[in-house]
Amino acid sequence: MANVVVVGAQWGDEGKGKVVDIYTEYADDIVRYQGGNNAGHTLVVGAEKVVLHLIPSGILHEGKRCIIGNGVVLDPEVFIKEITKLKASGRIKDDSCLLLSESLHIIMPYHKRIDIAREAKSGDKKIGTTGRGIGPCYEDKIGRRGIRLMDLIDPETFSRKLKEFLIEKNFLLQQFLGEAPCNFDEILAEYQGYADILRRYVADTALILSKDLKAGKKALFEGAQGTLLDVDHGTYPFVTSSSTCSGGACTGSGVSPRDIHEIIGISKAYVTRVGSGPFPTELLEETGEKLRQVGGEFGATTGRPRRCGWFDAMVVRYAVRVNGLTGIALTKLDVLSDFDTIKVCTGYNYNGKALETLPASLEIFEKCQPVYEELPGWNSDITGALSFEELPPKAQSYVKRLQELAGCQIVMVSVGPRRDQTITLRNPFA
Image (cartoon, rainbow, N blue to C red):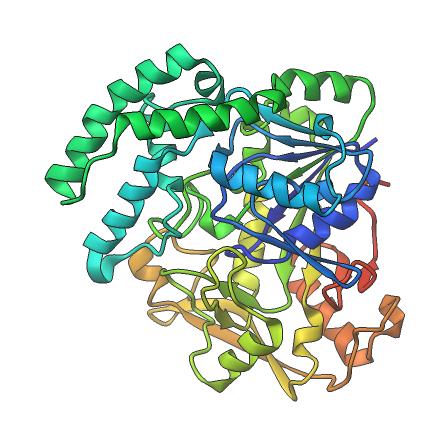
């Protein structure tokens, strides 16, 4: 028996959706434990491209239960649109396969309005948020003025809380941000309509998970974003608003740390990030643009072009440590197939001294100089490789070197976007 957590080992967008999709075959419950619709998972199933923002990738498999845990913030409109699209394509045939934690928090229209207005007011100090209202919703959760799903489906409670909270939100919108106020009646009517649809999915998901695990069922926990975007352990303040690391799987789902057996970090064979913040190995010339175009590095949620750079072993070693990674799934190795030489960052120098780990100070991080090692490229198509031995020797050497630098076993190598373009070296569920 094994329960597995999948986390991003870089700045997000590492290909977690594909890895979760593959591991779902071995799991009974697939649990999303943090984040909101500010993240997107792109999967290629046969000839079909599927993009998911809230619902776990396991929904593409029949006979699996998908759970959205209490650590997630949910935009009802986006969730309902996602359900509708999946049902239209025949992906959801039974509503019982999808459960929402009664304790998750609801993104309200004022969260989105505040998010966008704050970014606009920040000028050149923008964080780079998606404007989906994620941060303001988490703020209200921590400030104990949030609206939970259990509140939304109770008309009296929802009406009372909405009226109370709008006093503060409209003051902020009008007096500080210079925006028009939110209308109580309009929001009430809109969200009562959402409540009628969501009610069928609401459950005490922490209790259900506990019973399933005691019965010997296997769970797969998936997060959004990546380790370096964790609100506590990331490149603060250029981070998301939740715990993206493996610890978030417990707090965001209600399971005990004792129930987690394997933690798999997802890492690209290079590195990308979206939004502002330090990025030591960023490539600002044609090499970076080549990675962007070949890798299709544009946000699944926003369409924004991602910043691209060489693989950063300092970042991945940090992810190994703070998450307790037991394995790494390496994605997009095929994107590097047309490079004569490939650089790998082995460490950082700051003021002429080598650093042991990532600096907590943003000011220092931004001034770090990457130390590079240059490796030969393999200049051949690897998308048809079915085993590690079928990879060109130079591609094998590259993977082995990344494993050495990361200090963690590479358990999977992705050589293309499809499910079948994946080499499994060790199955964490075995």
